[in-house]
Image (cartoon, rainbow, N blue to C red; front, side, top):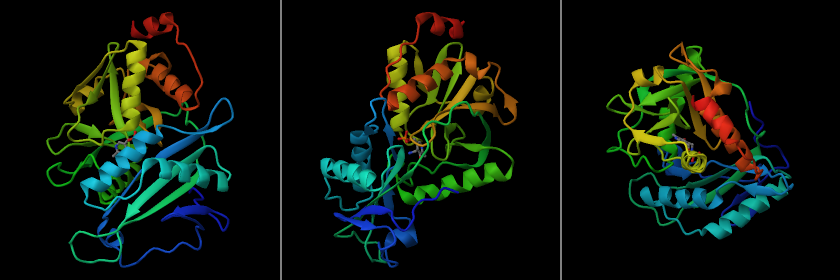
Length: 305
Ligand code: PMP
């Protein structure tokens, strides 16, 4: 398991830089008891010029605010301050390729009334860049994503992740790498911590918004496809059509773009190295480190064929 911190680790906590081992949270917080907290998952990379760059930092901190507002958690922070604090935490921990975890949590309060204050912590830990060619064996989860009428599913709320943990653990217990969850109507939704796309006949397909966390990586895949002239269709997707796909991948800040080997034990027809998905994976890996690459038209045409 990842070594998240040691006695030298520094975190940001309510405006202060403190040692992780000195930081205290309130055991009477609603966040601990009810999962009533919101967070972000962000990554920083050492770019090709050697600098540390937080990828899509504005988007992540905007979503943190949206998540807090959606749950009525007081949010008194501004993005510029939090971004500067995050760079400082990275520097103090001597990290460039890192995972960044801001968490907004509630004070001591066991009732269900609105809080007048909240806390914020920003933790960072080392994360090796890009997983590369590893392909995943994915299974349909027996767990479905939460009903959007029961939760604000566009919020990255801590409590939602009990659902993710159950699905991921079930997949691993059954010998798979990861789960794919359907929505409450049985259509494909997303992974426990990532969005999904599939590829068929030179086009990409992904579940429409409504039952998913609209991922920042998903939006980046749209950007990449726009630049490469690849059509992306958002729609309701069935489990059966994913099995008929040429390829499929998960995308998320932590997962980046990671291809699937098989889905419910059916192996995809196209070799990963010959798919558009692989080209998108390469484009994403370059983008996060600010490396300019040009993908020859010829390469695109070849894989579409
Ligand atoms: N769906 C879920 C349930 C997630 O937890 C994540 C990770 N934040 C994603 C999708 C992907 O979102 P992003 O690309 O913004 O990391």
